[in-house]
Length: 170
Picture (spheres, rainbow, N blue to C red):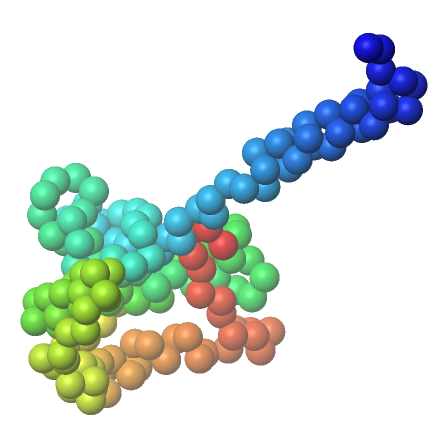
């Protein structure tokens, strides 16, 4: 039994639509890239990228030493994609106790469990530390020194603009 002209058109249209659907799924169903953050290898003194959920300090780039700390990288407004305009505002890390608690909480959340806070939220600033790249001394987030270090995020440039915090995948 031969197909009629109208049936051939419908079959052709169905084939084209099916092909377009497959093409659409292939092109637009890709997983979004994993969000990344800047980290700084203290022994190598170089920036590198790590997944955004990483809790510093993490393993650095050159060995198994845990000397990778979060780097808060800034650039003038509108220039965050320009690597030459970026600079490290400050470095950040957590105490071993807070790092352990946050990692346990993340694992528990992944497994569907709740984890009690060993370190209360109000005490967490005692367990978070910042420093500038050119200073070896870490300062607890509850100190005046830390406040001065992170104030760079609220300091306007010569055009009166605040800096932008940069991420590797913009």
